[in-house]
Image (cartoon, rainbow, N blue to C red):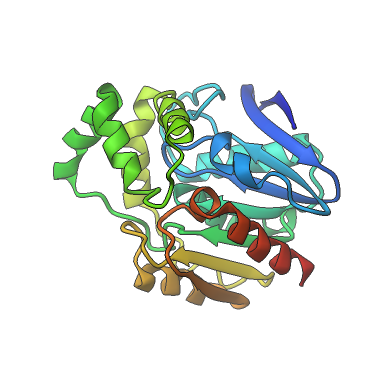
Length: 255
């Protein structure tokens, strides 16, 4: 694997790449980083690239308002600057909303789409009364770790989990509340019908954030989407069951 940075719209974005073949672009969720895909980088016949959005991980912060369409604009520019030829875009959680924005506005940039426990097209709302708890996560590592436990319930590697928590702490200050507000205001319910490429929607049946109804809403928004429910997996199958995740993804790409 190689680690590098790329200047995109004036901001350095960090990414990790491995292998060769069909390009597969991995996009993390809220509090995430490229590390969330470190166990699924070895995908046979593929060049995998895990990018970190502005405000996340080792990428530089994004000036101005936190907005999912702006994240998608950076993702589009990264695809072009990195010379990725229509990658399969695999996006998790908040990253799924960013991917939906890209699919609606720049469909020519991607080959197909995999949405992993993704925010639905109608958004993922966080009540205002929960915002103080988000601020506590930003300043209290213990509270942050407890919150992250809920999104990786079947991860038993404590050292790896500690690394995920450390990467989450790197998220830029404005993004903690900003991401929640952006997801709450997100609505692409009527914008995805023109995306006529293959879409796979994955949901772990133990996910405590994205409900099955939300996953079905996501699949129904696309003309060529199918939903697959994974048994005994929570919100993050690429971390909790990487072998099964790679098998499903490889099969989808082979189609």
